Image (cartoon, rainbow, N blue to C red; front, side, top):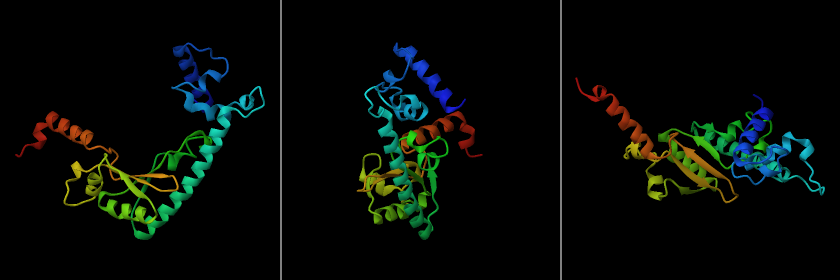
Length: 206
């Protein structure tokens, strides 16, 4: 199913559930479920790009703002990757920073909120230091600065370390630095506990 067909299918479902007529998309602009598609409407439906008063359609400004933000953050990402490469820190790009212009017909269709990077646990402190030298301030790791300091500490058990730290640059972009795909500790602990209960023989000594 192509993007156009998928959007139409979603809009029909939402219109039926919310009691809207599926004639046009005016109703969807402020809808709490499908309102995020406003720039997509502007992109997919050229006939809706001008309102009756000749003003730009609601999605146009959002579309171009999204695209400008994507270009700016891609530039920032390039600078970060250069610094990591020069220091020998392996890194994997996650989510929109990597796929924003390949999974979507145009990156202006998707708001890019932050840059997600994945490093090894043992490289986390080095990566965090590099981000700090680039003007990024560590702001969050589970709501505690102490938790952020524990990430990558070989003396602190990895199972109890937060899986990511958040770094904010004064110029307005955010980096989520991950060493684990599950940022919170409790889902990882719960998963391990469940597996231990389900297969007790594996945890017993012969």
